[in-house]
Length: 170
Image 1 (cartoon, helix red, strand yellow):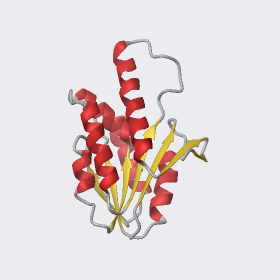
Image 2 (tube, rainbow, N blue to C red):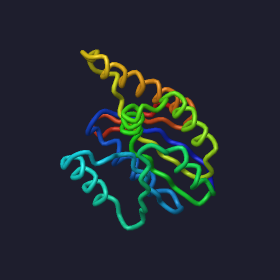
Image 3 (cartoon, rainbow, N blue to C red):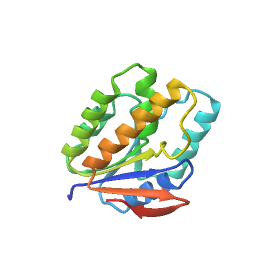
Image 4 (cartoon, helix red, strand yellow):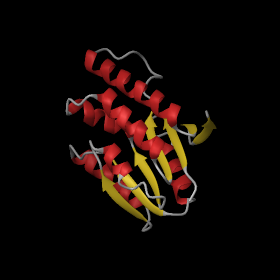
C-alpha cells in the first residue's frame, strides 16, 4: 500500500468533509472514520447522526474525542484508510479537558508522520474572521491555528475548500 497524508481545511459548511470522504473512498483499504465529536446536546447528536448516515457500509467508526494519536497509531499497519473528522473539535475537547494542546499536537504529528496507510485529516480554518471578543475564544483560535500549521507542515498534501471548491495549498 502507498502511504499518503492529506489535510483538508475550510470554513463551516464549506464542503470539506464531503471532499475528504470522497477522496478517502477512492483509496483501497479498510475505511475507518475517526470521530472526534462529543454529543453534548441534541443538536450535536443530530449532526453526528447525519454524518453517520452519509457514510456507506464500507466505513467503520472509531470514537477518539481525546486519544486521537493513539487511535491513529493503532491502525498503522498498511491496510487502513483513515478519515479523521475533525481536528477543530479535538482541539475543543483538549481545551475542555485541560490537556496540553501543544503536547497533544506533537503526538498527533508524530502519529501522522509514522502512519503506514492513507490518512486524511479535516479541520476548520478559524482564523479568517474578526478577532474574538473574549479570552477563551482567542485562546481557542490560537490553539486551532497553531495545530493547523503543525499538521499542514507534516501532511504531504493540503487542500483548502471554499464554497465546495478545492484549492491546492501544498
